[in-house]
Image 1 (tube, rainbow, N blue to C red):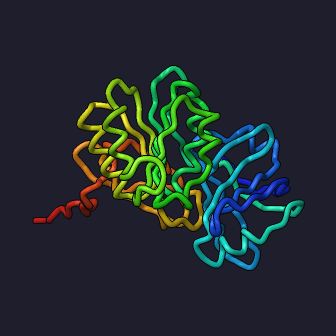
Image 2 (tube, rainbow, N blue to C red; image 1 turned 135 degrees about the vertical axis):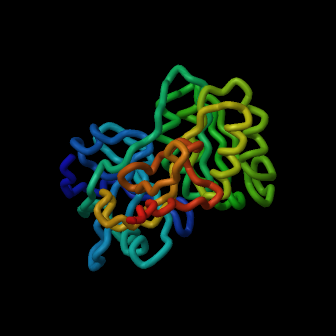
Length: 265
């Protein structure tokens, strides 16, 4: 596949929290190609490396990106004004495996919440959404999810809103009979979800967070260890992911073994 950089017009911009922004970028051609779980690489003025941002939603000819300001690059992105052009490479990566008629649980944690919106929309009333945040002020996109899914559950670490606790608490109450789990968020959260999915025999896919440079598998900077049969090998989050089967991820830190050296003589 050829990856072309294209310009998009920023048609709407909202600030959801002091550090989280909601961009709507118009590009009919790219919007038509984008699938749930994929991401884009955004060009930041004066910066060499693009910034990877997960796709939150696609609405007609508009791609929606919800991102958090975490450094100088995303801070510069946040200064973009409505009407200005944003240059992106998209759509990138492999997304979630979704079947609209299946009872699917979508789980997001923190800034891993936005990419679950477009995914949950594919299953509509069959989607159960569990989103976890640190506190009430960090909760985002709740109404968007309520319009998209059959059921939405919110948890907060400090109990200031929704259920007091982690996403695994309500997951234990709804996992019975589920056909599939899709999740995105911090690695410890994904690891615990993967263990529960394995315990209940529910297929689970996770979207991994990893620092990226090129976004197309050329720089090899986003390698992650995954299981391939009885071996552990490296795969690249940008090209082979960001979505992987939870059973394939080497959660316990296993490292690929170097090939055996055949001794002569």
